[in-house]
Length: 141
Image (cartoon, rainbow, N blue to C red):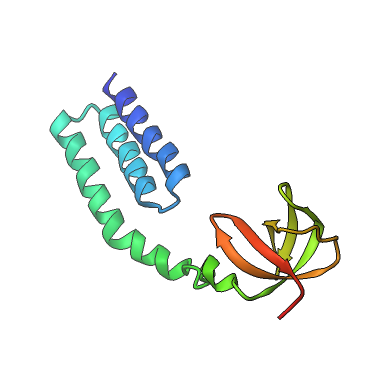
């Protein structure tokens, strides 16, 4: 019955990995499955814990660096929203005062607000960024 506990532990870490995306929890999930194998072979609990600990250590020591080399991290950095100030944007959906509208900055769509009505198709200048909202004015820089 101890194998079932190991299976639950392994599944917990695998499911947790789905939310983190770092592969650290996946290593613990694989180690949990190896601990379960020890339980299925009727090994004592201390051996099962040893299998779990040693396999986790070995996977972290060898598999993680190998994975980093095989799957390079993205070097793309996202721009800071403050870098958008002063840039031009194209109005996609009419901007109505108090209600807002939609603008395209490069390839991204943003909610936009202005003190005046601005029709779709016009070019605006970004004056301010608050959270995920742009405050714009007519005209371009």
